[in-house]
Figure 1 (cartoon, rainbow, N blue to C red):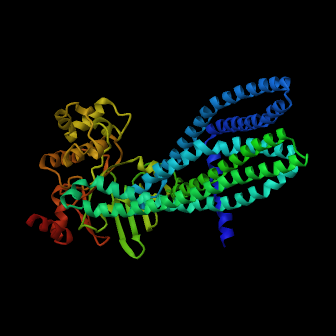
Figure 2 (figure 1 turned 180 degrees about the vertical axis):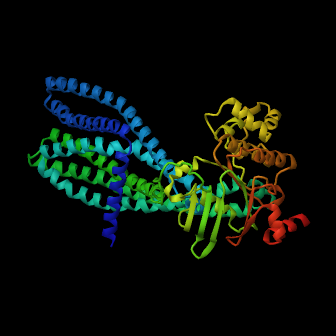
Figure 3 (figure 1 turned 120 degrees about the vertical axis):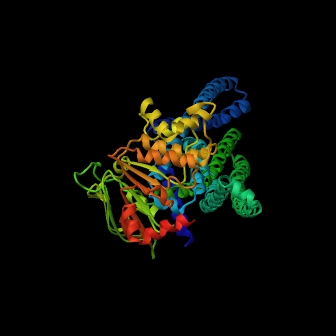
Length: 585
């Protein structure tokens, strides 16, 4: 069983190294050059060790001619060595830079392509860990070890071992079993690093989740005195992470001790066996000195090899963590370019069922249609499925039954990218980017003219917000727009949606918790939107949607009635009771 695990770890480590080598096309040439540079350095350094035999031979025989010749060659090789060491780091940096850039790009693209369900279940702190801690581990391995593994070490070990066998085959064969035995045990301990790294990264990920919760809800943490609670949670994860860090340290120490034994025991063995061979006239003093230098050089590089294998195992653990994103289900990329179909309704639900979690039905046999160019409101009690309807319209969930038609065709026939490019969306979360007022609005339509920009700002009252700021539209608004009020953020959010000038506008409770002035601007902007726009509004405050063309009432995931405000009030059904209950309040 243990043997199979070791084989599996070896395959995983090999695969990780192969993936890192093949990730970036731009990096490959630099990796190739770095490997050649490293192999050259390893061989040249080995030759310098080999020349110690010639220096010793010249000294023992008092041969000044040999000493001078050897010194000239030695200095030339030393100068060449300095040159290769000068260019080596530059090549390594270029390779590392391109590879890490492509890894980060790949992670970000994978995140973008994930289904929305992933973000419903995962904490943003876990994703941030993958983009920071795990990538840092890979970066250290790529920068410091990859080219050494495939360049310097093969050149150094290859030259040293071949030269040792040429110098004295019997002495080399006596040392070899010790090296192989130590190598076996080192590999065993190195493979452990993958599992330890995986566990450590999970604890670090949990720590990042807790930190993000604290930072994003610092006001709540303070007002409810939750600092002790969160500190305890953080301290537990920190202690667990430290335990795994101690395992890493202990494992590295064992590998270091074995590496030291690999270096010292053969070196001492060479010394005693060499003296024995000298006594039997089977080895000269200069050969023994040269052999000792080469053996020390090769055994030292073997020690480096063991450390690199441990780092490779640790990097494999980090890659496993990153691949959790790559292995998740992605959104589909097929489908037709979006277009309008004559006389078709904008949206139609036909006997749609949807469960967020298996067994818990959120949308229950829902059917309705929304005419093109209309203003339609979705109303109902909290949790009835209104926001889920909007998410289904945007193509975020595809594991539903029934059919959802957009412009007369099933949503599954449209390209999601093309479909979403026709949507403008205002959520109740009022999310804004840590940027200027201008840029937050311009994200709706990067190519918008100054006239278009000024128009939406006037319609939504954002111009008044800008006038209050020191730098006007170029004022920075802080993370998530924290420097603005909720009403101001929502106005900017709506301005961005209107600037995009898309045919479908989805408003998820746009006037919830707003001051009177902000609510006035938003209602006015919605009413003045062009007739060719199809607007879907989710609303709790029913007084804000009485002028809509159609009102769809949802209860327990099902459409129970629809019509204008007047017709629904005359029916005295679900909408009538909802409206009157708010009027009483």
